[in-house]
Image (cartoon, one colour):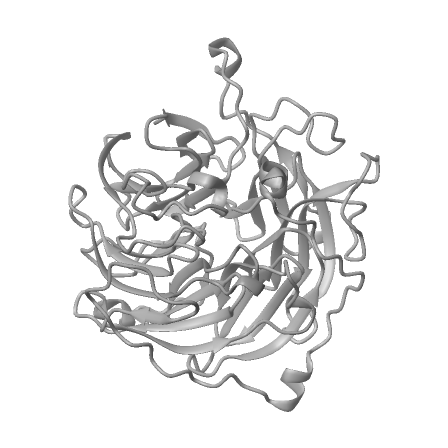
Length: 472
């Protein structure tokens, strides 16, 4: 999550400002530079204690096959790597200073195609056809890539969603910005009833009293309608209230952090900071609340949701500490900062088991449940997940009451000179490999070889946005 609005007081410095918006290919593309394949980390399946600074560790069935370190303007003290999206032979990697497009046609040797400098945390990305959507949840002084962080509230302040034309991967073009209430922390793509229309569900925290972009109250999500053939006409067409009874109940809601849509099932699951919400999205512009969950004993920040393939389960994750603190120590209960598995039957969710990455981390390592994706394996419920400095974990929740880890990769703590935040922000399975966006180390490519996950290698996707699930 790492949202400055929510935890600016936790010791995180201001964003390093970049005052150029570059959409030209980098030198790496022109020279054909490729990353070297690192040696596989030493496997230690019995490891329970922390590893040394930057020491790599992995289960015997997982190996690191490539790493592309941060470069250029996307390699500053707080140029943090964020979310991922995929299309064909390309990976799109968000960063607080912009985004990078990689050629992953040879997964063990990814190469940079272009790098766009356009600051605005978190710069989470989604791809659809020639359009790349980018979330901005920092108040900017205006909507341009040259804008700085907003200071004294002004009528020109902006935060929301940017749209880029990436038909030419080497030269992305900034097309359009859409201001949304309280910005866009994350977003999810939902197809319209025809291929000519696409909807963007915008999740954002708030309110921020005194702000011109995030006024109280904030119980809703913004829905952007995008005419695919004329994306510059995109606009907010709805802002449904997901908590109509909150005022009567005396509860102050803070918007949503993440929404995962499953269009084939006409369902979506919203993680809304204090609540989990199951939605009917039969009409994409008018989502209906089917069930609202609250767990004040175990959950602090309802962060994200993942359906299993047949939509009979949902995994909700809790981002205790907002991604900035060490919650994988022996002092934190296994049900906090973890995943809760809910069975979904007859339109109702029932909580079953919990899963938390099992290796103890040090008190200096930010570690908590973060972004992951389902592996495309018929008849099994297996997902890969990022845990910040806890690394990458592959785990099986086919048995809702008895989830278990089957593979992992991690690095040891950051060195003192590297700052306070690090580790895997997002870890997703795509066409035979796991791609991890590491906050400070860049793009990792991992390979898992295990009888349980081998069936996933047969699946091929042409486009993959984790917040828009598809069946297989």
